[in-house]
Length: 429
Image (tube, rainbow, N blue to C red; front, side, top):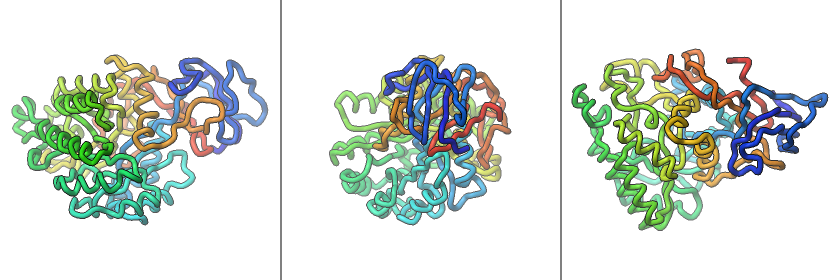
């Protein structure tokens, strides 16, 4: 619903950039701008009031990477269903992967995403492909895409094996765009791998993807970025050895950022014992030591962002023989509920909000809204303690490739405010 005046009652503010961080306050929004934050603001005629037990508010959550499959695979997801999934998950902004068909590798493709998502409560930010057609042979029209609104550049999950081409890309766009997003996977080491290489893969008789495949490509791109004297962002770090390399780079003050997919924070390769293809993801779920290393890296700010890595797959390409199933799981609707487990593993609620709201925007050099007077209103309303069970009915995506169906969750989005639109969901739960 569109609203000129909104009064949010007794909401605890989780925003390290706000002078009211940690306080329970009333928040008055008029014409998409925060007008007042006080202990008690009276409700007047014409004001929409939002209240809920244990209500919390933060800057709108931002997913750094999701695949909406549009154009090309609208049977899996399209812009509309992807936005519904984001709303349900509490996101006001989503970075859109260039892995569509045709690939987002030109100005018209960028404009298509903006045209399809105009005037929605979720703002979409398309990435341009680093190379034409994601083929890793020739650089794409990066400057034209940036001028058209590309928020950054990546080659999706198709790692660039040609070091000279990657170096050229880093050098070319460092003066006009945010750091390139790199997926660290050496295909020659990971070829035909189905899951993490370890005891479980040996037991199951499945070809493994060694952590070495991540480590080798990560090390190469750290060196290339240093040579090019520019920053770089590493997508979906999954291994303890990868974290070790990033820690070493941080000690030498190298310019980088990194993210981790929520699945790699809460699941391990042992989940694949029943050959359930819903757990088949890229990068793969790894061992207990890897998972613990990733959580500590978040705590130490070696990894700065948590992503959903939302990857819808239709049932024909997911519920099939394990070696034929495609990699990926959906994650927008369940992400925050999954992150409740991390609070019990040493991360504070404020740290989690920072890594799903503030830091993603920093990576993309975007302004961040704040729960502060005169800020524009782009907020997520939520209850971090609500316990619930994720069901298939909760899925707004066209695809249902989630291993969390039937699983207990802690923490739930209650609504979002963005672009002058309020979506309030407690009554729908």
